[in-house]
Image 1: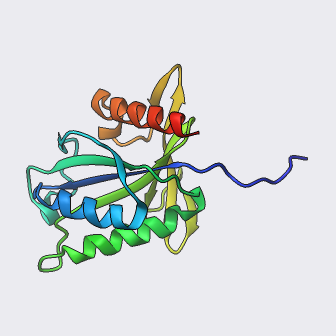
Image 2: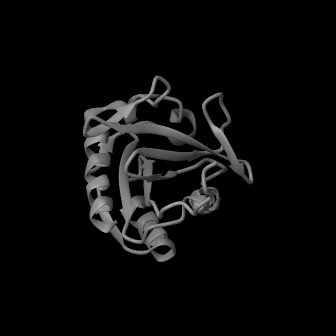
Amino acid sequence: MGKIKKPEPVKLIVGMFSNKVALSGEVKKILAEKYGPVDFESEILPFNKTNYYEEEMGKDLQRIFYSFQDLINPEKLAEIKIFTNSVEDKFLVKGKRQVNIDPGYITLSKLVLATTKDYSHRIYLNEGIYAEATLRFARRTFVPYEYTYPDYRTPEYISIFNQIRQIYLKQK
């Protein structure tokens, strides 16, 4: 029988997308006030692997990723997703989101995302929030699963997560 132990702290990441790039600075400020200093900010990338959000949010969506210096307890992921949803609500215009904020975390072995949508490969956390292991670390890089979102499979995204993992590795 294995001994029960507390999980190691993990590296909080947030992916944010919008067609109003100026909102990224406002969102970054709100998140940094809550979760501590940002220690990684990606370049702005086109969010063009799906048109799922187009009706609500418009065209020409752009994504940016942040990671935070302060490590978190992984059991806080649902609470963080609820908070990021409340931040999205602050920017609603006529009931439509202007920004989408996707929190998750990186460990040495995986990238986990939070979502409100259930599916066969997602695990319920609490408060209507699920977790998904989106990427695994193997052969010195992050590797997608069969269900990984198309954008999270791209070399650009994987490079970002590898960079954030290196920051995390130095913090351990």
